[in-house]
Amino acid sequence: MEANVETTTGGSGELDPGLDRGAGNDVPSHDRSGTSTAIRRLGERIWNVEKVLAAPVIGPWRHIQARRRAVAARPVPPKPSTHSILQSWGEVPVAADEAALDPLRRAFGASIVETRRSVDAVIECRHLGDAVELIVEGCTYLLDENAVVEQILPWLTHRTLTAEPGWPHLHAATVLTQDGAVLVTGPSGSGKSTFGLALDRFGGIVNDEVVAVTGHRVIASPRPVSMRRPGLLSLRSLHPPTATVPVDATPLLFVVLDRVDEDDEQQRVIEITPLRPAQSVMACLENSFDVTTDPTGCLFAFASFANHVPALAIRYGDSREAAAALMEATAPAPVGGEPLRVPPSLPGPHPHRPADVVSVVVAEEAVLYRLTDRSIAHLNPSATQVWRNLDGTKRPEETDLGLIEDLTKLGFVAGEA
Image (cartoon, rainbow, N blue to C red):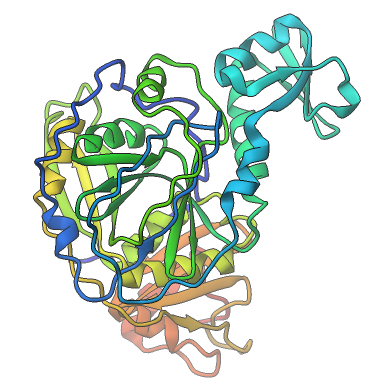
């Protein structure tokens, strides 16, 4: 029986500080013979990837050769240029002593520019024994060397993304194939970069880090920092940074990764499962950079995205085998339509939807986000009907009390049953 409610606390929004395990120097060949059934069978209503932009130094890219692609009938309105925003991030001024600067150099490579004018530095750090004192725009942090990298990566990414207010962003990789674009996301360690390299033999890597969701399109941005690790060196040699790269509007497939542990006996397993729109929204929220700062905007943007973009979940062990299987998979047809916003209820003596919960319905299933603790819930259709009927004026049916009790414990329902 399908669960009434699935929950998770706190969307990750967390950056993986390097390439996922397994990339190494094993770079796949550029075999263009593969065909993408998953992308060709998209249905009539599709989203677009349009004018993907790159900037020198910032991240690994390759020039996308012009070739015939399906173009959505829906017109795409003009948007601001991401290139001008990202171009200024070719250098990150840093003031530091040698001992403190070393881990930053290892992490960011050429993106780090040393300066002794600490008053003008974006980042300042000093070595204090086994720790590093990190000063970011006047705020001081005492960190170990590993934490320096872990703290700076999200911060730099946030700095880059805030230049595009109102555009929810995903921690995702994008690969352009002959039949469309594949947007790949998943938690840190799920293999986005490695999987992107494996998909590259069917097309070309567009980006490896950040995607903005806006209007009826997504915009892929380059990595805001340069990582010096063996796997990434392979990626950079294969896809060196370039100038602005225009990409025609093209169909999009959303893929959520679930990587099997290396010591698992089923390490080579490949399971491809269609995702319902609500599941797609959950995946977006859990891999968004902006959900904590703009949960309402993110929820509704991702809900519209999920209604129009087919999505698949892949549980896999070997990236190459999984990428080949994806190219032959059949994607579900998009449901289309617009998501339904469910407002809070007026307070009453009986159970009601509280003001600190934002919710939306996609394909008859609700996704709930609680502002106070950043928890997320996904309701099946029957539970969604119960949720929508909570207005605080009447006592729920006996058959609904179990669900109401569960939602109340999780903080999604207020009032007495």
